Image (cartoon, rainbow, N blue to C red; front, side, top):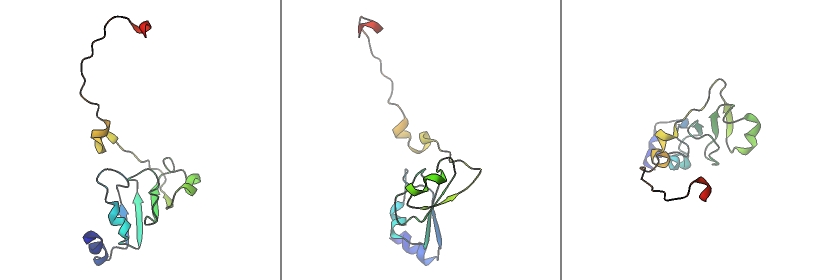
Length: 113
């Protein structure tokens, strides 16, 4: 609530979210609705499904305009761009395999199963 009050107090008219539903998101601030226009910009390659996000800035490859009916936001399609992300950087704990361990196989072979 304190951050939302600061945004209102500063007279921010357009608030842009860069994270969407990703790690370290601050969606609860957007849910308060501190700015008259709230935009999601490439932080999450899909709809936020939230009535407090008015626009989604996207590209035609990750967000085809013909799929706009599936989005709660109005789409702003930016040509000549593409959403790039490296999930190993944003959610390393999800995508890093556990440490390797030794497994001993006894007898048989591929046909023994």
